[in-house]
Image (tube, rainbow, N blue to C red; front, side, top):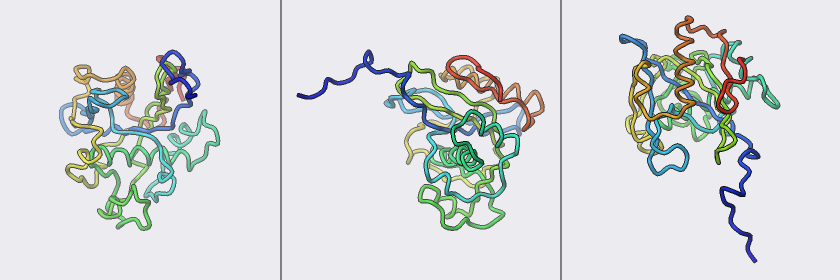
Length: 236
């Protein structure tokens, strides 16, 4: 006799272990006010359909294998290792690299540098960086927020949010986001106009944290808000 199918009433969402994930906010500060790149998730997706979000996703094993040019800022690396089991510089680096890889897969933008030639022996998911001679550069990234999905959701993530200036885009493959298919619309939005978008609450919270950091001089050493659930639990 087969087991009855699980329902929303029988699933203990609080028991779901959040997956490590990372997002990258690309920041264009060349105009009259900062703009950020956001994308709209397909309407048929189970998780946050139709919502505008930053490029991002789960950390994959390949992210620990990718070579880099430039290291994370020591302050960012230290904060990425707080409240993490088996924390190490490698785990911190993998989070930053996941943000860069997911940004490429969802937008076609390769973040890094062409100053060092093409990286060799790259994992399959990073092959485009080798083909276009782009080394991911971690020193271009700022760690600005961390958030764990509340336990009432069927999919939970322990997400780290990074920011890089748009000048860090070394190459763009047009149409790459269509191949990935998760984000169907990419838009540069003025930071003071993002409240007009259909965006998740945590996205708005992170945007507010970014605005505060920009107002404070955009320092790498600035405190990083850590949200567990719906409110800020502490600052890293």
